[in-house]
Length: 73
Image (cartoon, rainbow, N blue to C red; front, side, top):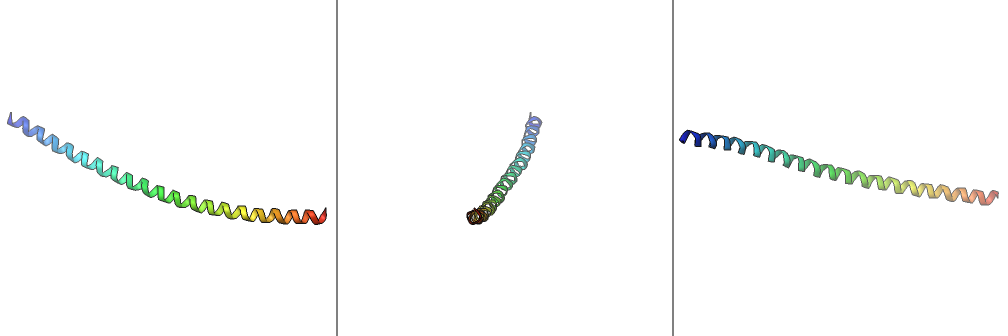
């Protein structure tokens, strides 16, 4: 009976080690996901800035074309 209990205790200790390793991996994955979210948010801000700048330059070109059309028409 005592040997059976020792065996069960050893198996439980092994399971505890495995659960600790799994928990560590989940924490690492959570950190990675948070980093990816920050990186993605930064890229989104940069993309919006570039898009806004492009829209402003396009509007300026459209104004010039309209002025040239008005002069030529």
